[in-house]
Amino acid sequence: MGGYGSGRSGGRPTVESCLTLDLPRLFKDGLLKVGAWTSGTLRWTVVSTGEETASMGFQSHLGEDTGYVRLHWTSTDRRTGETRQCENRIPLTTRPQPFGGRRWFFICPRTGESATKLHLPSGAYTFACRKAYRLGYRSQRESPRDRSVSRAFALRGKIGGKGGIGDYIAKPKGVHRRTFGRAVERVNRAEEIVEADADLLLKRLLRRSP
Image (cartoon, rainbow, N blue to C red):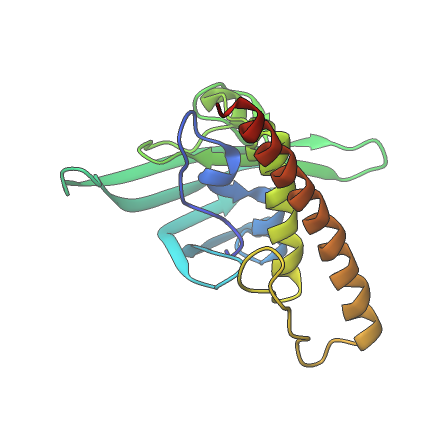
């Protein structure tokens, strides 16, 4: 299961800083199957590098409209180095859809509410819904300047750009030149906003200096 972050920034944890169980993706990847037992290992990786950040074993059994997923892993306290054996048994249920068929949901172990995603913040031992941990999104806690920087680096990352703001971006092999050109234009526009914000900040600091 790639594509999930597992770091943590200061303040209350965000969705992006948690391990996340994405139910539709579990079905899409064939890890959960209706009317079957399944087992294996769930893995979380950093999208940009493919580096594995966490893994845990799982077993599941889904009937026609109810089921469960059992997770088990070893958690290590970063401060003390002590280990703890963790286990979560998460019920699943379904709801009928307006045009036929049924949609699957987790039942949050902490709130009892239905959710398609559950999260595990750093230091926690139970996957639960966003409401249970009062999780926000990183973008909600960033200043406008932070958001502009994040957007610029995100656009750079999509086309393989490395380095800092304004650094040269080499065209990846296999990418059409026109497509690459449009992507670079988006990067340039985003970085112009970052540079304008930096200029404003510098001017404010200079006005405050004696």
